[in-house]
Length: 214
Image 1 (tube, rainbow, N blue to C red):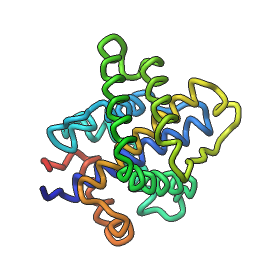
Image 2 (cartoon, one colour):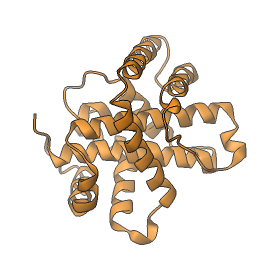
Image 3 (cartoon, rainbow, N blue to C red):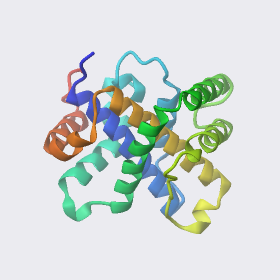
Image 4 (cartoon, helix red, strand yellow):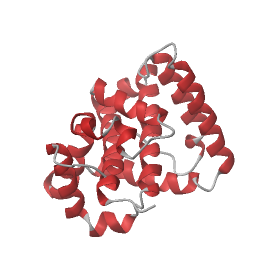
């Protein structure tokens, strides 16, 4: 199946949103709760009708991925505001995605863990601490065993808080889910270098609600 640049933009925004929220938690101890829930829910959508469905459907993209789309535009078009630490997170996530695809046993473990988290949501909301703790443990037992390790920088007091640590790990897992989606939609690193203006234009369309479909 051929995928559009519009779809790849959504997946890329998903990566940027999760990574921005990781940075916010690490540095400030808090991050937008509704944006976090969008990221967590993206992990639990295992059979989406289309790319937009991973993030709540095309009619909700402007709101659900507002942080990711804004961050994408900022990072791709405003050199003076470029966040090097955030870029490092994104690059490392994409590197881990390629390594994960060569680990069938780990992919199976992730699938089983996601199914377990989905079962939990029959009793708790996706953003409940029990669900987040489960997903964080899944990250520790799978992705964190692959090199390179993602070193999250921030305030020690925030990162040493167990609830914050669980949220960070869950968001990193969500970033990886979006990286897998990015690859499935035909994304690659060359596009990040050569099609930056096109991604910015597509992101701005999604932000304004002008995207009519995929």
